Amino acid sequence: MKPIYIFSSGRLTRRQHTLFLETEEGKRPIPIQQVSEIYAFGELELNKRLLEFLTQHRVPMHFFNRYGYYVGTYYPREFLSSGHLTLKQAEHYLNPQLRLDLARRFVRGALWNLVRVLAYYARRDAELEAPIRTIEDLQEAVMETNSIPELMALEGNAREVYYHAWEHILPDSFTLTTRTRRPPTTPANALVSFLNSLLYTATLAQIYQTHLDPRIGYLHETNYRRHTLNLDVAEVFKPTYVDRLIFRLVNRKQLSQKHFLKEGGGVFLNDAGRKTVLKEWEDFLQSTYKHPKLGRHVSWRTTLRLELYKLEKHLLGDRPYEPFKHRG
View 1 (cartoon, rainbow, N blue to C red):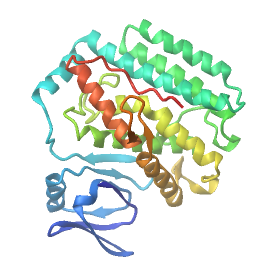
View 2: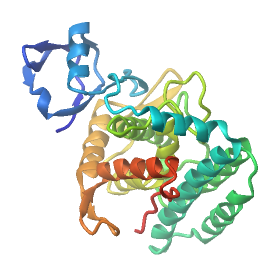
View 3: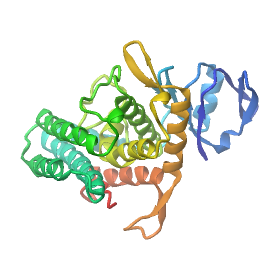
């Protein structure tokens, strides 16, 4: 099973026991048994019968608008939900100390991986000693924070230092001195926004395969927003999954200014740019490495699931959560 990405506009329906995609390019059956999740970038017509079919086969569907903004997810009814674990999740959210402890762990993991990314390029003669030291100091200060807002401010400071360091890694046309989101105003911001949304949805899809409730997060406020746990977990993985992929795509000249368009006061990937990024993103998630503790090869997509299992153990009191730490 693997994700499918739909760029064309058309109609997605159920025909007997399979998906059926009709676009200007033609008609294509898609065996549902081969689909783990669906990413829709084109304008698609669909109906209730299709959504019931997706629920029956436990296939989430993620929607993006014409600029590549994440719009939302059709999240089928949970099939692995656990009342006991949901109570434990809520308990860790409602207890200020338990919540802060978990949030600190997410941020420490994120900052560790920021340093690893910069250290990789420092070994290639980039001038990154100063930002590395600053982020390491902030990492040490995580345990001194006394509230979630204080912790998020610290994480924001580390990110600001980190983004400024990109000028030593990327060409001038792709540096990122100021993070802008809605809309992104530079190619680098457009890449970060697009890939972050892909990481959020990939993490959400993996949460669906566990007993965890994606609505209860710890670093990000659990409020009227539909999902927050995937945002927490994604913070740990952004440096390794998102940022390193951006550096590779730009430095290998797979992306250039021609892959972006300016519209509505923002800068966005065009169709060719999105297809290039999505191919490399999917190739990365499917690639494997030898897991240091399991002693066998696992994919980077599976690594997201393993992280969630660690979180489950923490919530159940079996083992304190230690976030993923990239060793490269």
